[in-house]
Length: 233
Image (cartoon, rainbow, N blue to C red; front, side, top):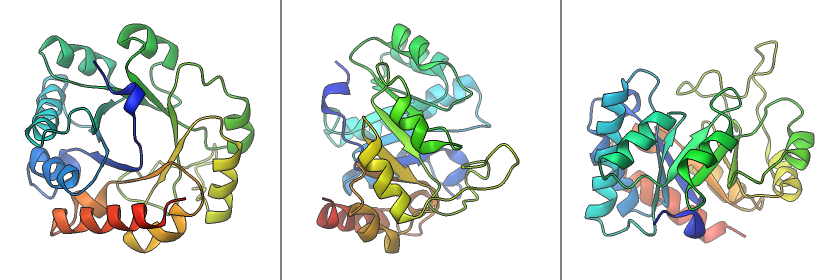
């Protein structure tokens, strides 16, 4: 029923109402998925539960209208309650993405079932030891970064002292080799980064502003996807 077996994190869009310059989330998702994005994460730190359910419905409707429900996955950031409530309302949500301080992945897996997607943001400090030793039995992929500092998630990649730790391409290539599960990397990623990023061996890239903040969402999405699929190992 859900897309765990067909999960493709090649081109990963993270989007919420904070990121769209006032445009509907559904329109952003429609343009991005039409242009090649393979997974969408609905994320908002300001929306209420009911607003998140509505946003999730909008994203799901965009994917359904394109006839891509089985090819493009939809996940919700952090909010297990929103995923469960959305499913109760008949919305196809394939799973959840959580951070290190969010609901434990074991609980997400218990409530969402074996055919659902569960993604986890990798630990920032001691990253390489963490991904080698972490119990990955309940998760499908790691999210890592940032490649560059980013305003859409200013706490991304901070260590315990508050210092931002960015990842260079050499580190990302190492990460791809040591991780037992696929890795998606983002954080300030732009089109110019994609060719080199694609050659590191990671499974995909994630973006927020490069798509959701673009003047021409469809053109920006198409450029990113074409660059990725042309250069990926």
